[in-house]
Image (tube, rainbow, N blue to C red):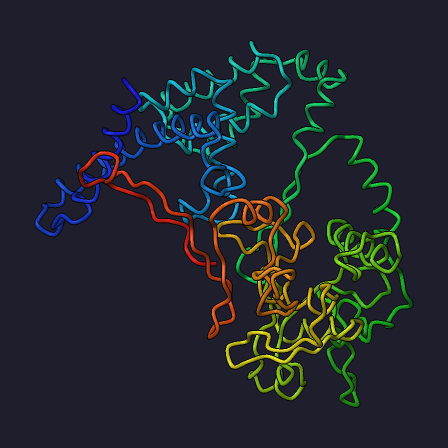
Length: 468
């Protein structure tokens, strides 16, 4: 198929899918609706396979840079409207399936769905780099789909059993762990991510070398040692088995303390995992208290939490009227948690408007001061270019109207950009201005040729990057 043929078909499929979405599904009988769901699911699987092929071509041509995107991952995350990092997951799937042609073929023939293919590929790529062994494991997992109908979760669970069955004495896995190339592979695959669960918690997910893990544990384990105190120092009173809750004078023989699972006997009630987490937080606090951390645009790295002053008052918290606080990256804290943080924190007041926009942070100067930079972090949170989420530490303060052209160094003339997009804005027709009402950056993309002008007929076009 020619490139124009592939583009024509993709456009036609999008147009037909739009028609399908607008159909009157209420007229279908139950069995017909089931058949419709099955047909749409099959079509979606084939489209997923085609999407991965198209992504591979986009990467090979580096076409998105010409449109102002720093990476294919950023472009895909914006285009799909998924969670942050969704684009990276698609790019990883392309890379992993490239080394597993049998799984790639299974996806393109409808034998497996994209979630199943990604589950197989992600697990297989944790194995030593022995092509024959990886191929055998992938084939066995495909057989589980054929014979038992395993879904993605089932495949992840069954992975260890498949590996043990194919390598019962650990000859492949154990021997490969001793090789330097396996250590290098683990180093290249290292990562650490934080994912909020939406219920006030966060999950850590990471991978690295055994060497790195030992260095981390050597630091954390001394900080994670159990902390013993005198019995009753927690404020609670231990009660022996069979002892009454109150004595003859009505005095309680046991009392609750603020620590769950506490036995009031002086022993550390924390489980090993809880102590290790506390040790990680303690280690970061100790490091932050030194001068070893790099400076962030003239100021020490700090946790920034935004909350109105009234919500920090205890009486407002007790009345349940306090608003939540949030960081520039979107993490949210209860007012009680912010109050605890404020006990040992540097508080920087800012004048805020009715919608929470920063109006005044100090005197305008030619160079961006620490106060102005903090205001930029509060307002923009990350690189303000559409679809980019690079953290403030990797960003510059860009003058909308250049200083040399008479532009002021004030919040209404600044926008936070990562280095790639900072250079891009200076070298391309991308334009940005600060909306006078919302005080937020608004972007205007460069003019583009559309498929309408290229082909002279109606086509489907994805949305352009929206205003930041």
